[in-house]
Amino acid sequence: MDPRLFNYLNSAFYDGVLSRLPHASELVSPTSGMSAEYVEDGVGVLTAGTEGVQAPSAEVQRTVDLVFAHATRHPERSLAVVTASAMHATRVAQAVQRRLRENGEAADFFAPGRESFRVVELHRAAGIERDTVIFSLGFGRTTSGRSTPNLGALSEKDGRQAFVRGMTRARRHTHIVTSIHPKDTEERRLQYGARDMYRMLELLFGESTTSEKAQAPASVTDDAADAWSRTSPTAWVARVPPCTRTTRTSSTWSRSRTPSPCPPEL
Image (tube, rainbow, N blue to C red; front, side, top):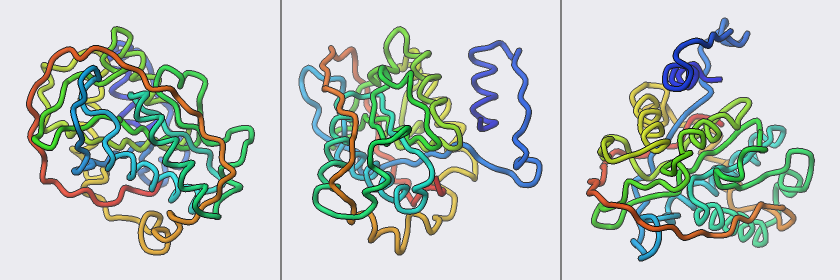
């Protein structure tokens, strides 16, 4: 487990009683089990009857690009996408399937197997464990910068448990993709696991190892960029039906002008 995540969970959930033994590789060189990136163009339309702007197109596209980059560079590592929005899970799954139908590479990675690729919403993530997890938050802002502080499963009464569940599905690396940056968010308006997510992103975006400041690796640039558009139609992706809940309240979040370079290698 990434030391930053361990320290946060230990402090916020376990009163500091846990202890951690470092992985052997950490004794040789610093390693990171978590990273995060901000999708600046993660905006959409605020639809009546839904929790804010769900499944912004830019975040769907970025998540799918990362899935295929992983399949090309690290086919030996299992992968899942976890999200706080059921609607976002559905749209990501559909986008992955669409790209697979249109192209013909990486079929073996997406084939059914013991730990085959999955896209799941937090409520369905309890039994999922993979080498790498892309946690795509699934909520964005309107074009005017407005959004709601309700972040789906994270904002429910058991949202803190959902936060822990989402952050602990990966054996090796969790990469968070978010269209909402903590510096544009009012923490006091967030509840339950949404507030934990805010604080976790603050930790990740505040350090030089995060994707905002780190140099982009080859795994998501150059030759891998071409591979994103060449995959096969034989994948099985978990479909999650969209859900509708009542919007609670709203606040204004300004758009950040921070660029979003490619993330560290997953």
